[in-house]
Length: 65
Image (cartoon, rainbow, N blue to C red; front, side, top):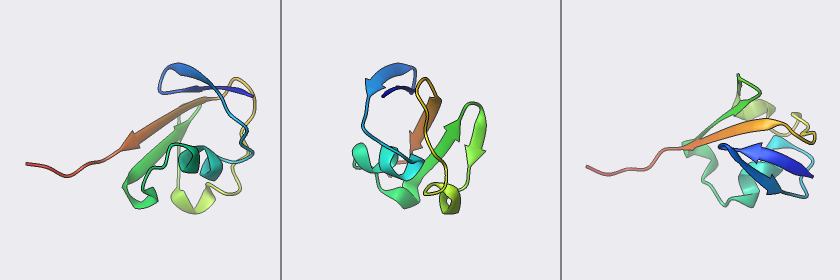
């Protein structure tokens, strides 16, 4: 299905927000997710079903100095 992730269309085979995060191999504890303008808590990723056309923002924090 086509999802808009960080402003770009991606064709993913995912059922939940957790699967979207896993697809990009991101460290879960360093990611903030937003779906259609609403921040989704990490404990709700598995229950958050994705649908075609959803706008998802993934913000991944990295260390550095």
